[in-house]
Length: 173
Image 1 (cartoon, rainbow, N blue to C red):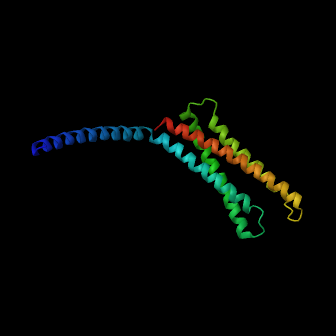
Image 2: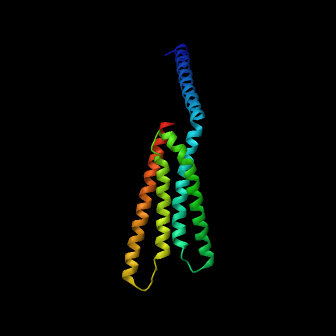
Image 3: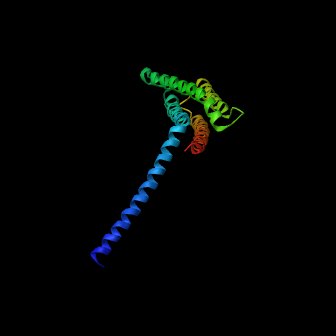
């Protein structure tokens, strides 16, 4: 192999690199323009995901601190409940946009958010009407199983909503 052959090989590789660079740039511009076009739709989806995560997190805090005898801890529970309601109100506003984006004519996302509100109200009623006796081990076991089932049901519901949001997000990427 001579020096001239190495020069030819270098020119060839340079040309291939340039073509590859152009292809990557075109793809990048295409993705960027798609994100600009679909940015508002994606923002609704991402906000809904964040609000669902916040709802999930605050639900646990609220439950844990709701009946505390310590006023400082109880205030944290009250704040968590306020944050839950705020998250639900924001999700309620976004749900109309999500229905439009998903093409669902039956107000599916409005019903999904309503389901979260019902779940919250039912759990609040449970906490308000249940007397937690720390001396009766059978009652503690029964209540613990009940709470585990409530949390499991909530977790499955929220996970299903997040999966639906992921599918919806896939339509705009």
